[in-house]
Image 1 (cartoon, helix red, strand yellow):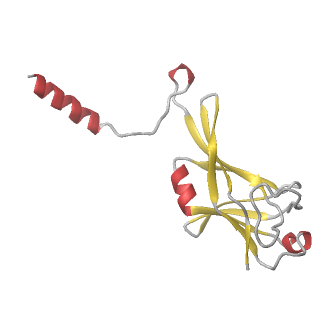
Image 2 (cartoon, one colour; image 1 turned 90 degrees about the horizontal axis):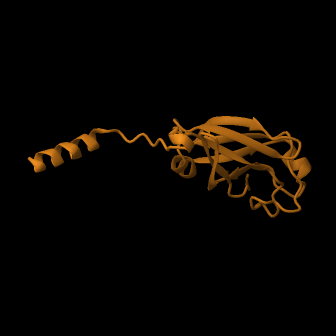
Image 3 (cartoon, helix red, strand yellow; image 1 turned 45 degrees about the vertical axis):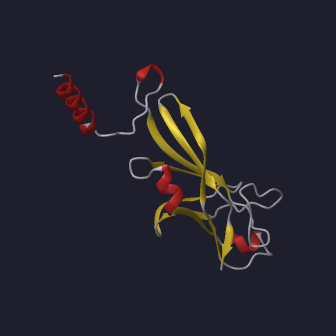
Length: 151
């Protein structure tokens, strides 16, 4: 009888789908979001780390999130070269974003702001930098690894 009960409990547990829902304060389910943010700097020697120390920023540049070669979101950098994207975690997960997605920057300002750069566009892979919890919202923070020129 104990064996039948044990087997029944195991079968029931395996039948429950794993939803990935995490519990926040007060036992409420956390909503989950993915934020990709950073600043676009002029590349130096065709390559720049994510910090871009002492390099000019690129304002008003079109920046895209592409996954598997398809654009999934786009924005324009602000006056300080900054950008932010919020991705729906029901369609994208952090592992998928890190493996299949990257950032592309297209701007006529690349050549004027970055006179030593060859003509082309900027590209960066993505890296996970940690989570932020705000109330019942969990945000996975992702940033560019570092942009490089693609001729």
